[in-house]
View 1 (cartoon, rainbow, N blue to C red):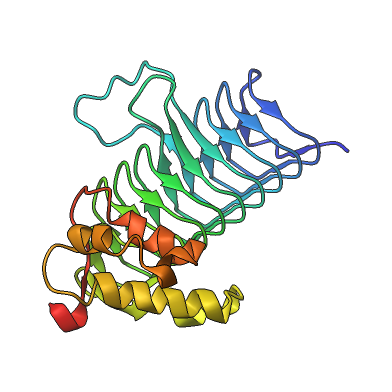
View 2 (cartoon, helix red, strand yellow):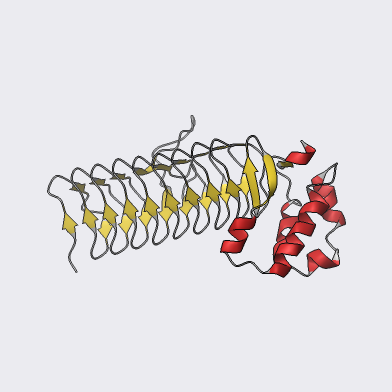
Length: 265
């Protein structure tokens, strides 16, 4: 299967394109780019040097993948990367910055969907099937778990951890770590478990009950949530559920602090 390269596009001779790729008008593919099969790069998109794209990726108009990070002391001569998994859709105007470290990677997991004008800062690590709605802004060094949705215009501070299965509402302001399976809105406020998302992912009734118990045992108690988490590690309901244990153990790694339940705010 041959590639379709528009005559107005610029593809560096040192770029490696898989079979069946399409490169649209005025798109630019720089040196050192590696691209899997059946990718589509739309008009005016730019794939910067040393970016690694998986298979069947669609990159929208004017998106820029692999640009230099917005870091005052960054040395643009170092070789670092953006790595994008298979079957990812990158919307129009999206920007994804490469790592600030030599050999470092900003990673986007497979089957993720980055909608128009969203941004992912350097050294981010997005899991699989993550969705960023239009205009979501993700700071540097942010980690986002699988199956998480971040609403339009939401902002996530650098170094924040977000667990799997989280639902973050539009225009939310996230500067604290977000445990798995929560629904978040406003400024670092948890509105309970993401029950709709859990149902869609066919999480069992037993795990759902255990997660509800873990939520009450940690986030609905006043005081230090990390201490509450340590105190309930041996709880029989929590220890019987892998998802509930994951929820509790998230609090054992203290970073930027944690979101609060709205009822405790």
